[in-house]
Amino acid sequence: MGPFMTAKVSEFGIELPAKWVLTGEHSVLRGRTALAFPFHRYTLKLTYRDQDSFSITPNPFQSQIRKLIERALVFLKVPGNAFPSGEVEITSAIPIGAGLGSSAALCAAIARLVLWKTRSDLSLWIPLATHLEDFFHGKSSGMDVNVIVHGAPVEFSVSGGATPLDQFRSMPSFEWYDSGFRGNTRDCIERVLHWQKQNPHLKESYDDRMQEAGRIAHSGLSQFQSNREEGEQKIKAAMELAQDCFEQWGLVTPELLTQKFDLLRQGALAVKLTGAGLGGFWVALWPGSRPRLDKGL
Image 1 (cartoon, helix red, strand yellow):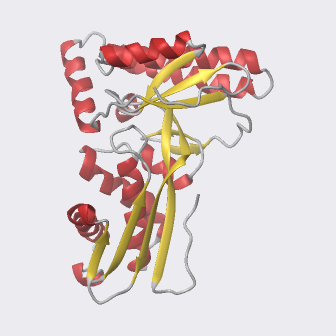
Image 2 (tube, rainbow, N blue to C red):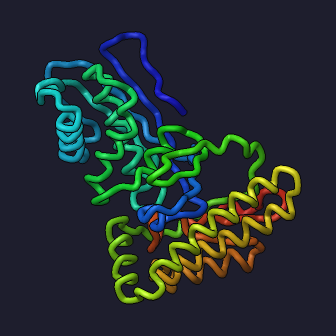
């Protein structure tokens, strides 16, 4: 979904999707490639209108939004009084801490609003939104922001940016399940870094494994366009490889493993966490037609 502008120049609105990741989490921070997709089942909406005072709805976002706007103005090198007033309303259905890009969607929406309000160059949208996301995660790769802003599947690396994956017209039967657990991205990043320090001889090899998972997944998606079963098998292998990285990094609790095996027993070809780890959503690959399961875990 792209931005929508209302008829009056004093009003602004935008709606952005969540995201999910097939392969590449964590290793993308160290130069590897990730495959990420918009998740339109969940969206964030932001609207703005001029008024004499400054207000934010819902109120719990007050301090965060103010800090993000101030951070954006500093990034753009415009005076702080360039955004003195107005009413900002945010409605988000994207679960927080679920690996679906809730903070990236918020940052992308705020960045787009500030660019509109200050009449700044729209080419700064992704760099600004990525800068704002650093506020939440320390140093953002930019992957979440890119897929959310594009609203389309992308292959992403820090050095190469986002390459649209619009050649994949047909997609396998993926389904998503809420684990009920929530993980903090910054904590998960720190856990992986700690694991790497404890296992220096394995540090590069597991990043390389995640990179290989992305290569296999890309090949599988391509093959799926003409041969469903062979494509599914490659995507299955890619997901298993990526999930093994999560488990080696210490991002999968015993409770999460129980959920994984439950989905596999029900017939899923492969199951992996999407996002930073320690909770959030599972993405499951099902054979043939879409699964009949209609409940979470």
